[in-house]
Amino acid sequence: MMRLQASEAADETRDEIVRQATQLFTHYGYSKTNIGDIALACDMSAGNLYRYFRNKQAIGHAVVARFFDEVDACIERGMDESQCAEARVRFVITAAVEHTVRELRQAPKIVELSEMICETEEGQAVVGEHVQRNLARLTGLVREGVANREFNVNDAEAAARAVQMGTKFFHIPFALAQHGLDRVEADLAVTLDLLCAGLRGRAACQPRD
Image (cartoon, rainbow, N blue to C red; front, top):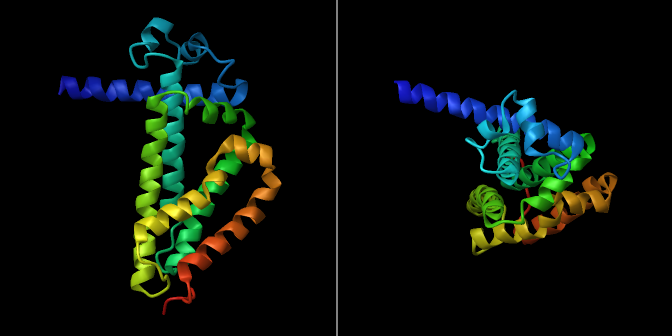
């Protein structure tokens, strides 16, 4: 019981560190925030903070992982199972991109985190796990579309991966920032039109009864 309580307390402390770090990174930027700033915001010493995260980069990885969790939660909350597979494929991509665009509008400095996350194998693993979760979600939807004769593809996973690769640009914060946030919605819609046309072949997306 004591060990369980200690573990829960440690998790709560880590969550608080990530929460405070997120606020600092979004306000001042990742590069201008140091361990001392995060420790002060958490009302602890820097030495104590190192008991939970080995360095600032590890905290940054945790912040990005939480962002991905929020994206997944947003998709799960908004998914309408009564819609056809194509509509849900579009939603999965669009909801994630819209979430990123909202974050960029509110806190442009999060771009620094997207650059930092690719600097280490650990950071790449965080991104890779998110990509694989999204691929599994898209693959399931494509398989459903094939079963319902909405889509006309032979390999659902390969087709889902093609959709993922075809929209990769829209999931990169610094690319979106340079592209211009006001252009994202229209350009994504055109991209999804082309990709979904490829999935359909001769099939069309029809509402379910």
